[in-house]
Image (cartoon, rainbow, N blue to C red; front, side):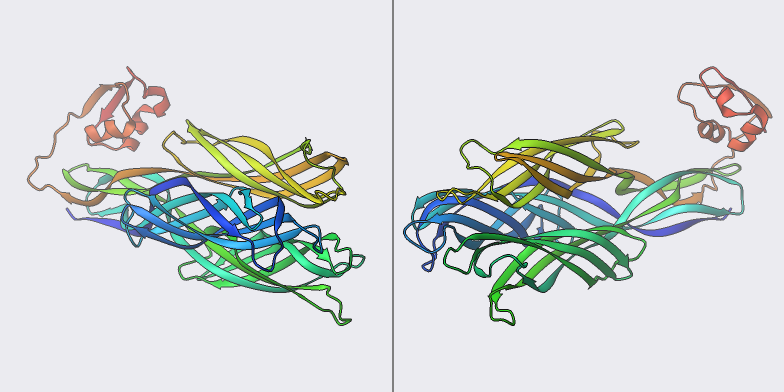
Length: 517
């Protein structure tokens, strides 16, 4: 008896470790010599970007930078009621990831919470930052799956339909965008840039063979002092569209993926227009893009077999992989009326309103997972008070949603991503704002598992062929399956069904089955 397994070569993905951690750091910021003394700190913002990451034995090493923008009221008689300090600080974190080894795949994301700032003296500030790190280490496994049997003797095979995650590609690329931004008509020329904030907004990601096409736009907000005697505070907004083709080996058009963006570096310069007025802001923005791509495959894998006339010797081997349970996406919308804190002045004009979503908890149970988090809304606005011409505060908008995905359990791996698609405001009073938001919540759920899959089949020529009577009456026991009964009596499930009818009618404890040979 000749038996040959038909196998399909696949590269599967195994999750080694998935962790979330935070790194706290304190920095002393010295006011540059060209800047006046600090009387009062008005607002501090920070963004984080990863510059280097590596996988080591049982740990990963993350390095990055935090861009800090500090707005303050100067001490003394100086031109301009608000001044700014911009600087970058390095951070480094070693995270324990049991089971990781050099050469494995690492996906890491960093997000900076609102920094805390205190005034040490007029020339020195103390800043405390908290940076959240999402880390996932995976490994690629090459294996062969038995999908069919070729034999010159009758062999029964039982297959399992599997939806598998196979290894894709993770790549980091930098994009440099140059743009000239003009001051809108009706606003004065620029004297000094106080803050230039940039928010990447993804629009489209297309995966091709060894290429990725990314499309999006950069939402910029520029806070500046006018170039006149009054040096008034001004604000302008721009959108910068971008499209880039990135060369990335290993990508294919049948993969699915996502792109995460970060701001690595910003260089700005005020230049004159054709009339000699300072009405053009030259911006060079270095955008980091992390492309995460993976594939899924469906196949029928042989999980058991037996011969009708010969005894089979079946060899099995362990295979660790991710079984994809499903993906889902939902749109969360809402609005809320918020009040400016009592200790802050009334609103004259809002300069910037941003929302950063944070997933706080993921609670998986049978066939469902609940995701909870919050949007940190940062509002920067102008007032008409000389003592506090610029103010800002934060407001938390909580959200929660439950996804129903068949097969979920407490040990399932749930990759969740939250993005603020829209955040707008209406000034409804001197100290009242109505916020409206849209958050896109996406999830990919999988179960890590180790299966024993058939790796080889042969016949046992020395084994005696079992003998069975021409007719057997079998009474079904608890947990019996049609396959188990057919295998026990060396017949086929189809033969049993042909005699006894639909298995739903007889395949229950105590049911009577006639088996003919």
